Image (cartoon, rainbow, N blue to C red):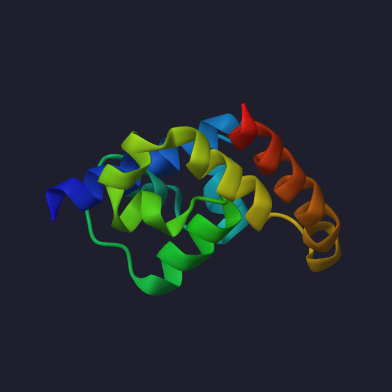
Length: 110
């Protein structure tokens, strides 16, 4: 359980700093107390779903990062790509799909 808490702590801290947010600003944006963010990033406590879901959604943290922390270490670029794709609208994904397939075909031929 401590590994999962630490994975969550690391993921939240990394995503928050990549977005240039302070703990206070993140808490404000999510309607939470700053101590909640502090405790999560310190690996303390066990956040409720009502806190966890909006936080990982807002920070665009892939759920695998939190629930299967070993997977991300093996494929960090794939996790980043998936996070970018999850941020697309349906119409953007529709437009990107043929290009992604084409690029994969090119990469796999080389």
